[in-house]
Image: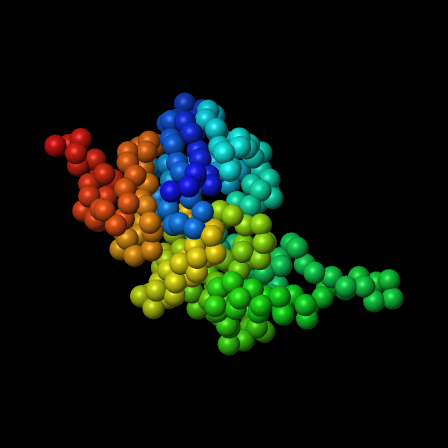
Length: 251
């Protein structure tokens, strides 16, 4: 393998007297899916929030292309090509897909010196990105986003992230939660499509079936620590589950 695109070294995060992360290392490579798994309280969400600039580490370092970086906000991480699609998707349900795609970054045009929203261009750009980057065509671009299926909503949220050509790392937090089998399959296909574009995908999931279907490696967290990393091709759900619950320690 080449050098990791992202390296996190010795990441520790404390909230007062509570240590949420303790000396965690993480590597993520371009064009791979790295799954992060662990029970509630294992530190998964805290770790990705450090990576995406939501939290700043108490100790430790982050490297992008082997160069040290430090993010004081999520906006700074996004500017460096690291973004996230959280379980809530952060979509405005009453708006159509194009309005959600450009929410907060609307395209405009000027007519006689007056600035207007360029709704036509936003719609065409949304259709283009959905098709070219994700292979998705929505039946209607006029319907409110709340009327879309779970997989289509995921597609809109992912399209918003990959619209930025400099996206290099995409974190996906429980993307298949509450989806049925067909929508889950479509969402996993979207993840594979993003991976094929050379983007490092970091997947947080409680579903080991999904993890083993789509990921290349699995990073296991327990009680704020990394307890192991395995290649999915050389492991199985029983081994990973044992690492999650600490079966070896108990033995």
